[in-house]
Length: 168
Image (cartoon, rainbow, N blue to C red; front, side, top):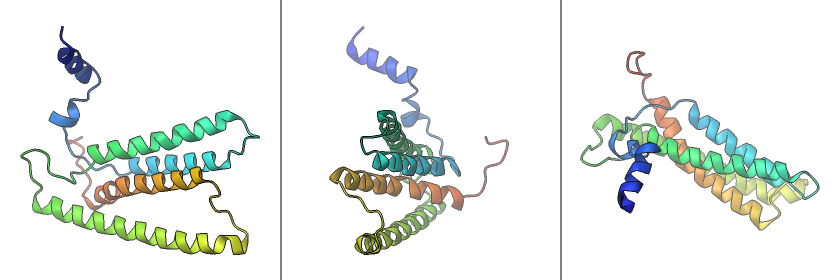
């Protein structure tokens, strides 16, 4: 059996072919919040690790953070249609939902970034916490990137009507 057949069989076994051929957009109302909570909890566990605690806490934080990032990416693929797939173009309603979700998430992220800039500028003056290491800043940037990936999906899911019980 050639390599390509093995790869095809693996894709069918792992259901990866469904992302290409059988995508059915659906509103994900609460799942993105779970991914965001995992990102925040993972970041907090990573930052709180100072070497005196158990390394399992650091491992749990890294796993939560990476799991939240991966979940955010998959939710972007499995949630409401935000991009044209193949020959299936977005209709007017989907374009409107995409535009509103992108605008609202951009506004939210811009507001959070502005508030973060003011906080970081005043944190030392008030004696508050702020990232001290380069790794903390990198994880903060990755968290913002994951937020930017999943927030439009979360908002678009809430902008759409609830699916009927017989559709699910």
